[in-house]
Image 1 (spheres, rainbow, N blue to C red):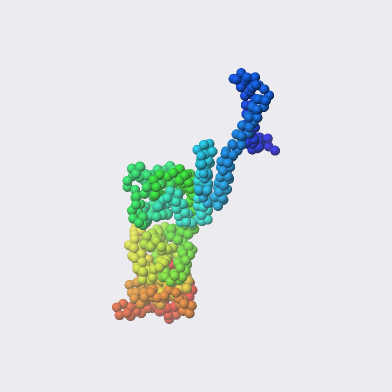
Image 2: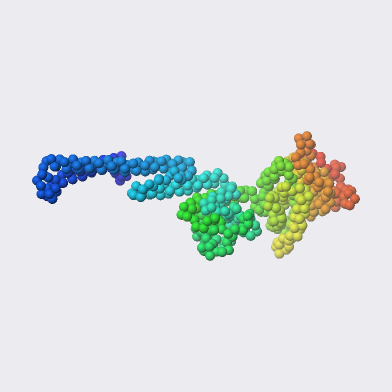
Length: 556
């Protein structure tokens, strides 16, 4: 058994617990009565000058009176003081049980955690002091439960969108914010990651300017900044919400720091001016504990991007691009909406490599990728299919719209000049497009095969053009018939009895000098299309595609 200071302190506490205040009070009052009974006869004899005051009978009477008064005082104390003390003790016991329940369940301890103050004496002061302690414990429980709930949600995911949404809304709930934004450090800059209750317009910066006054100070110090416009003289603060412009009572800039660096910044438009001490303490706790989760989510996103992105073009690689296509294809079949695939191949790419070197070819590929990335919608998916071939997936877009997008991208690429080695390189692409359900592809790979077939027909037709595959034939965008596009309006859900059509085989090499088949012009008659070695027309369906063994060489 330890004989150190702690064990001595424990013995002292046990000794104090064995004391009885009421026994000590009773002994004190009886002793006081005996003392009064003993001292009163001499005092009476001296003041009255009577020898009777020193008689045994008078001594006995005084002792009896002293004992009676002491006992009466003790009983009155027990009756009145003990009753109040019992009420306080019972209240404290109930509060302790309520606090324990709140701490265990993560709930709140509100009205039932307060003692009723019924007097203005020492007992009343004791009740008031206990209520203050109970309030502090309740606030601590609230902070811990709120923090615990947020951290439980954050620990269940590493998705950056979910993490930023939880952090932003969690911090906004503390100060009663009606809107806010969260910027995250992606490695080179602070990018807008999440918004809450605010219009996302062109006026809302997508990248945070670290040189702005308040922003710069918050990022440099890592400390929260709370600005009350009316108090601090900022009269230009306002927030654009779905309900119009509003002027916040205060603005909070909350840096999120992990490993001694700022990984994010939250800007909150608060509904009240000053934050009380509890709100500031909770905000500080939440920002410190949530920042590591944000840092982890950012790192997870970077790892995902490294695994999913092609190193050269910074587009998705083939593996992740086909995965996204599979997701969009399944969604289109499930909901009956079209999905299109546009395939692009850089014309004479091999000549760039042979003439100027592979670095020049890489520069051309990067330039084409940037044009594609800047030209597509935010919901579209662009990825590098392989070599100089690039693919764009356009969910919800039919063949007609896909043709328009493909033609626009082709023209933009044709107008792009690539500077390399003191020379200006011109680049063109051949583009093919196919759309489900215009073509009855049963898998995402078949839909890509239809677009691939159209792309090679565009290349055979003279390059720098767009061709479409409508399932029956390959046609150029300038010769698209209305009847072919009207297939976009048909039902997108094939029935079980409806026979699926297989994508056509790619035709073998055809003479570049001959036109590849296309729809007729004014009279509606088609041009005569060259026949393949097996006597069939290019684009005519036979069976499922057998690969690319009969394709022309890459880069042609």
